[in-house]
Length: 374
Figure 1 (cartoon, rainbow, N blue to C red):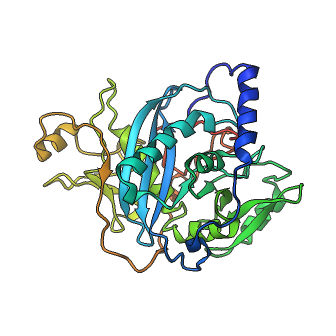
Figure 2: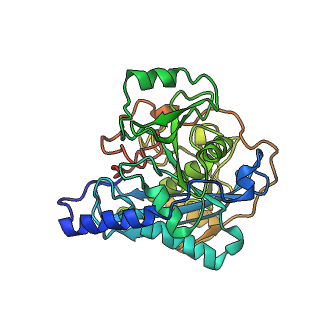
Figure 3: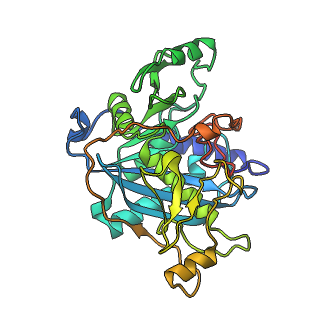
């Protein structure tokens, strides 16, 4: 996530945060609470959500918080919102939730008030849940405060309670042969903190799934697998795409020209997550950050002025909630295909990304993310 703020908070603040984590941790429910969670096909589940906060490179204050809701099992975006925010809490490893969750909570509460019919029945969080030094990562924090089932989905192993990314762990990963294979993350305390899951046949890198709130680990792993068209589950992948589009349209002088979402849409016919400009009459294809292209790490899109003229807009559109109608149903919830992340497989992750989340391969190359031991 973002760059670490210079200087940490006073000891009194850290003590307060620790007490607050302990207080909220007592409310975590690590079992299934909904009927659909116990159904093998998740019958009754209609909407899944994804949330994340992305930071502007070189800026420890400005960030973009986003929420995306998808239909299930079609995995089509039905709601999305993104907003620029100013951070007030400093970054401290292991306490990132105090920096991010307030903004994510606002997005969820706004959706609950304005469009209750689009509220997600479960949230997939780019980070850890109980797989955390104090057993209370960002997925737990957000789950308790929203009272929604939450699942932690991390891309890198958080080495806690004796868990290590050593030769033995790598050998276990090598034995994950097909999509859906997994093994438990058993800590020295004897507690299973999560599962390492091979989420796609074409990706050998596992995801680390942990309980956030109101859902069992077994159901969390099954749901994550069913949400994977690629390596990253679709709710998390779509929120990353929304964040990338928002950052791409933030002009250098600080004037936002709006979300790309009305014009750039990812579709199954566009391989590897490519998007295209959907302004009338425009056939320009856009490359996502991290993919090969003439602009190297920036969206290779047609000019803002071109899109404005194509749409008949007098000036920059105002960022707003983008609500989409669900598309035609698709019978397959977990289509196969390339993971869409191979282009960034060689990128070295930040050493700070050992906690609740890690940088998805190539999806956030335009920003550095501040992810510590949340």
